Length: 44
Image (cartoon, rainbow, N blue to C red):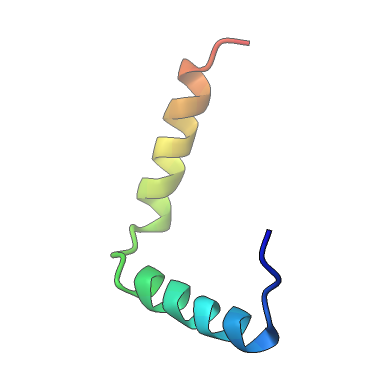
């Protein structure tokens, strides 16, 4: 396992934030509906 410096961590965090910022966000209502549908379909 390679040791990561603070500078490397800063750069990787910036790259991740840039990638995430390009993802379109869904509305809370739409997301919550999908969560509830998944819970209903899950067998316990």
